Each structure stands twice: as structure tokens, then as C-alpha cells.
Length: 419
Ligand code: URA
Image (cartoon, rainbow, N blue to C red):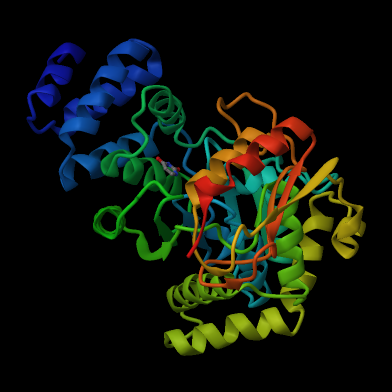
């Protein structure tokens, strides 16, 4: 077997065998297959696709390319994953709710890349919060307080790490078999047997239309079945940012406000009840969606989820005075209002453009090693379908650089449409 024949086969639209897929992954990890050969094969997969069997074989080969975490001693761990988006702070809100209902939460999250944000960058906005702890400590935390949220510190699915970085540099991110295998390989390696996946759909997501989102959901559910994991996919909209805030500290503050019941954006409530009720059904804690939704909202409203979040932050070394008083978080130097240029109804607050502009302000990375500015981003006051008066404030740009803030302000028409 050799890599040139494998590349040629996929280039010519033929199906790869399990042995050929395993060969590619093993030889790429060992360094015998070069980055340019892997790039050629990945591009051929991007263009010509993979069937379900090939995608499952690719997923398993990537999952078993490193360590497989055993969480069986923690009980019935239910994981949650999102395919990515703009303003997506759902993990920070939902996981403390789930833990407060007595379901162990042992979750590893990623960093943001491109226009999408990452939970780990958000958690690290809390001074002292340590996302980089050993597996033993991770499990200890879950046993002690029922929740731990950390980064991907272990040697989990290293083939995905290599392929994910490569895809990013050769414009091959938006591919259903590549996304499905990337997500599912990490989920299989991180030890969860039951997983709820939020397949985001819209301008600020990898899947831009509902047909592609359904295809991605179907293939991930199928991979779950074939690998003995229970996977439930739900599809949620990502045409406008989730909630009102976009940017690391700004999103953490919004998540804390929600946990404190200061306000709960309608879309946030919809997503946490949808994902949460499915998690409770998978955990055999709720009999149906209605019962699950009620349980989620009860522990959000009665403050138990907020208390669990405080415990989580304290247990991982974070300074809880920032949670108690979110005014303590660092602020950007310039906070500039975005005003409505006319009276009417907001028809568009485009998530993709807002995500890219937040990245331009410093909230995101172009390359994995880039530093980010945790303070910057947007805080909106309005959502799509809201009625506004001329000159009413739509939201604020948070920036440390006045020139950048003005550039973003001048691009308002690219993300905001009032009719
Ligand atoms: N999230 C992942 O982990 N991988 C992808 O390819 C896309 C989103």
C-alpha cells in the first residue's frame, strides 16, 4: 500500500477501504506521509466526499490515534458539543445547570479559531481559572463537585489536531465528512458514551443551510450508532449571534448575568432547554422534552446553577469575586455606540460578519498560536425582528484601538439591515 495510490483513488472519486484509511492516519501521525500529501488527500476528500462507511472508518482511525479517556468510574457522563458559532456561550450556562441536577459533567472544550469562539478562551478570561489540569485532577473535580471544564490537554485524537490545523490552512474546513470525523473522533476519545450535539446552521456556522445541517447530523448520529455511543443531534440557528454579547470577557459576563437571572435572552433560553432536555432524556432523568425543559429552567431560576458555577470557578482556581461583581473584569478603552440610521425593523444582524469583525478587533485568532484580546467585541441591545427608532442604540463596539473601532463602525451596513 502507498499514499500515492490512495490519493489517486480519492482524486478519481473511488471509495477508500478501511485499511487504506488506517494506513493514511498511522503514516501521517508517524511523519512518513508529508503535510503536502495529506493536504492533497484532504482536498480530494473535500471535493469528492466520503460515504458513511468511509467517514466512520476515518473517525475511528482518528479517535484511536492517541489516548482514549476512561470516564466509567464517574457514572453516566453526558457530553455536549457545538459545531461552532458566534456568541455561543451555551456551555458556560448549560453545564452548571446539568451538574446542579446531579449529572456528572466532565467536559473538554476547544479554543476559538477563525470567526468562531471557543469555551476555553472564555473560561480563561476569569482570572486564575486553570483549564490545564491533569486527568487525575479532572476526574477528582468531577467526583468532588460534579463538574469540571478544561481544555484539550491530553493526547486525545492527535490525528484530528494535525488534520484540523492542515484543513484550516488549505480552505477545507466546510466539509461534512471532515467535520463529522473531527468532532466524533474527539468525542469518542474523550470518553463520553452519551453525547448531545448542537449542529449550528446559518451564516455564522460551518453549515450554511438546513440540508447540509441535516446531513451532518445524520452522519454523526450514524457514527455514534456504529461506535456504540448514543448521539442525539439537534439543529439550532446561527444567522445572528447567540444572545447579545460577542467576545470573550463580554460573553462570560453575559453567561454570568443569565445564571444570576438578571436577564435571559430568548434564543439562549430556547437553546439551553432544547439541548438540556435532550441531555436529561439521554441520562434517564426526564421522561420527555417538557419535563426536561422544566427541570432546566427550574435550576436556572432557583439559583442552583449559579451556585454550581461559583463552585466550578473556585474549584479550578478562579477568582470568584469577578463572578460576584462582573464590573471587576477589565474593560476595553473605547466603547462606541452603533446607532440605527433609520426607523424600522431589524431584518439582519449577520453572525458571520460580526464574528469576523470581532476577530479583527482582536477577539479571535487567524492562526492557532495568535494571542487574543479578551476585552474586545460587541454588546448588542437589539436582536433580529426588534423595532427601532432612528438613532436608537443597536449595540456597542468594544475596542482598545480607536481606529479599529471606527473601521468597524463604518462597516455597520455589512451586518445590520433595518427595513
Ligand atoms: N468543530 C470541530 O471540532 N471540528 C470541525 O471540523 C468543525 C467544528
